[in-house]
Image (cartoon, rainbow, N blue to C red; front, side, top):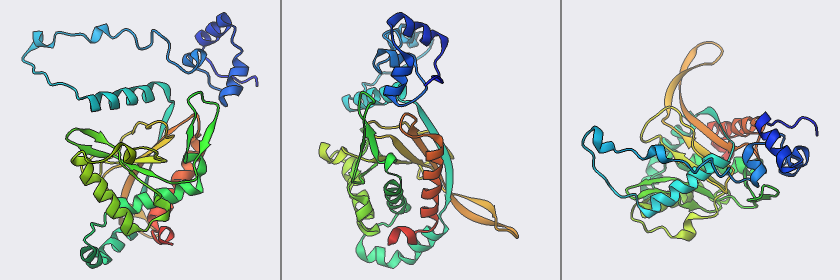
Length: 292
């Protein structure tokens, strides 16, 4: 391997430490080497040490108040900070036609009422995502902490991010690929309700294949969610919007849901992400394919 990509400063440090960049690149399974790779995947000691300039007397500029940050929020913040610092993340944006899903949901209104289940678009999106994970096993995997082993999972569990008064919680729906839409919808509603009341157990929050974070009920047109390790991807969803789509003869109004896939570039490359999203978009556009 002769095409190792590394800044001059990294090459100089590698020479000083006696590290063979080509050998290291082969061990990591990629060609791009960063400074932290020379320290065993850990950030350089001085990279996160000096935050003294954050220590500002804000009260000197006007009235302020203080509120404690909960332990739950501090743990989540530490995990997200580490993920953002150590994982090379890329976000792929796309959108899917939800005309068929909305028509199906409308047709099932009476049955949903009889079952006592709120049949949301999220249930269909989770089912479609599960099918896509089965079709693209590399997305249903985790990278070992040393970066040397990819653990591919033979199950599909999907985390559903829930905004609660005590912080973000991510309960997990198990075996989504093997469950029907009604069961998925019921379990999402149950987990979300119990998360609001802090009644979700630790066991119900671990082991996800990937996560969905849905801001559609709040707003926004796009965002870049942070991968939640040890997962290698996360799917963000924003508010469905009606856009003009050319059908070959004229523009027609079509409801489209924006999708935002962030992924770990150490495991997934851009072409794989594009193929994955194209497949997912097709499944959402034609829910018959996920009902089989």
